[in-house]
Image 1 (tube, rainbow, N blue to C red):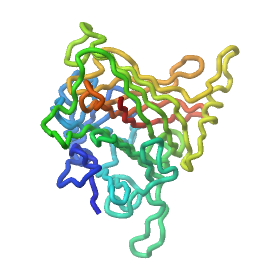
Image 2: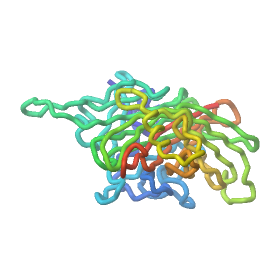
Image 3: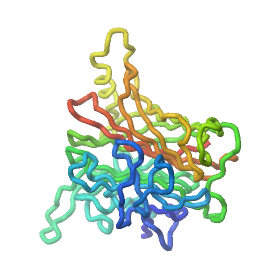
Image 4: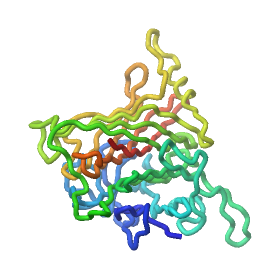
Length: 372
């Protein structure tokens, strides 16, 4: 069995790696701020912020356009913080021979990372991305008595080229969000490791699309839901020229996560319950929602940096046009975007009041991979 760690090593999740750097295995976690209050902050190998204007999340130190980059959820260790438990998932690894997933740092998810692995859940996929579940029981080490484990799910996505990938791990057994984490990354080109990992055109526009998948957990109640959707990302090169300083700051990014569907853990679509609650008690003359709200990226200068990284706000609106969920998106560009070979990996973290329940907040953490 070859166990491969999610890391900055090129294609580490597709082929055997002789060594790897695990972004969760850092002693200095820091307190990186991704610029939003949704608990979607990110962290990385040094635990400290990168040299930037503060709008980008921390992670790989001294990133360049020709370097592999990873970003991971910042660890929150203060038990009185509403996001306590973020970023605790570590030693994330995938075994391609057995199609199993390994996670360490979480309570009651089996004996990870060396015991029984996470295996394919039902459903096995959320669109093109894979879904895994932790073992349901673990034996008492002496008596052998089965011990019920917590509900954990993991979503893993990788591009056909293997140059971009993401993973999300969440649980549903806490009245607050509980313990978990996410990671997304850009890998080296294994055929030409000295080539720039991201090349952008000097003018024009580009559009990318792909699948989105994630997990939804709650504050104020237990439970866990699945989500699947489509992603569309558009880039207008040089749109804000003269309105900001810094390489690539002038590029505009527009993004939508649409055709969203909420599923329960059996795979049944429960979107209609959410939509019905959203439409409850609408003012006269207000058109009701007929589908899950689309996640929209906020547009403005300064979203992208010289390394092909970008972050800004994300939101949904209710039928009355009021903001419903708010948070951030984070993305990495990879490959040559002057050709058909460019691709994008990204994460979205949003949260808001769940209309189905009283005094309950829902958080959605999803990843996408988009290509031309």
